[in-house]
Length: 118
Image 1 (tube, rainbow, N blue to C red):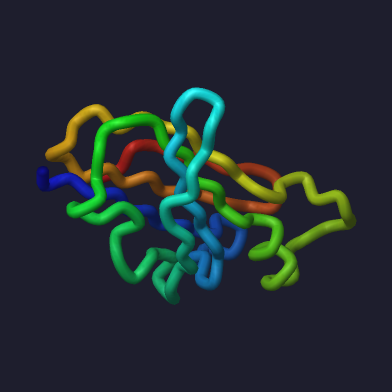
Image 2: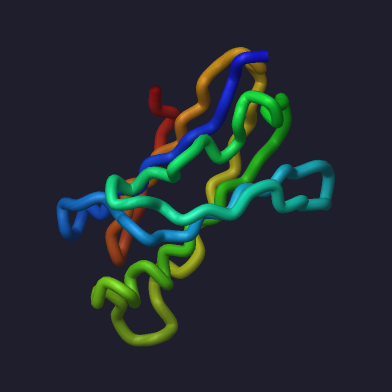
């Protein structure tokens, strides 16, 4: 097995990497959700190491939860409570144990997008 999982968060409203944003990875199985990792993005909007490294990488269903609300509050971009975006969950599947899966998040106070990156 040589696969691993990474992310990159970009603040599209400010045109900068989203530094200091918490990202939590869960493994999904049926109705259960198990936390596997909790990390904070660095100055480049990336985690310092893979969220799911090669030695723990496995096929299955996963969820990344981005603490967008906390980040938006910390950067002065939050509007009145309740925020339009608070936690941003992205559910995805890993079916190739030998691939690099990259799940970036493009974030603004009122919208987000994602894709399978490289």
